[in-house]
Length: 185
Image 1 (cartoon, rainbow, N blue to C red):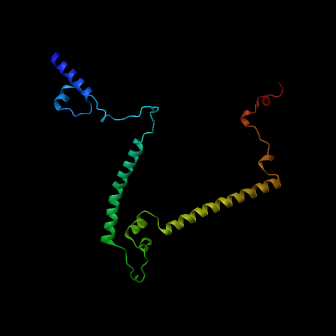
Image 2 (image 1 turned 180 degrees about the horizontal axis):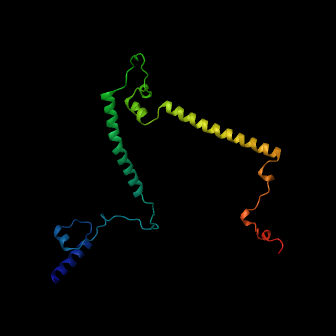
Image 3 (image 1 turned 135 degrees about the horizontal axis):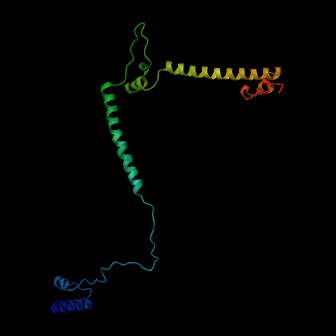
């Protein structure tokens, strides 16, 4: 134990005497590591040491990764489906309409996906027209009702026939008729 300690001390002293010379591997084993001046990292320690606080980017990267994942999760099957429809079905071609045949509203579109959407997702133009006409009728009835209400108010004011000319009567049940039953009391 004492011998190893002496050997270490001698190796450290020898390293201090010639720090730039290459040492043998036996000296490296015996001595503890003493940094050489040509291999020491230079750190400029005269500046103020500042701990820079930055906002975390974890949630930004996580959001972008999930966005990429779900976009590809839905985008790849949709792209495959659209490609298959375009390759195997293709666009519709114009043909003569037989006598007496009235095409449906979705048959006017050229692309099969657009036809499917027009047939099963959107309402037909006839139904849209009827809905618009019903909304217009409701609004016209409201306008007629407002005009009639204005006319009624005008007539009531002109003839003095409105609720503001009435005197409210009290409830019959609140009238005490007991004095009338025996007036000569």
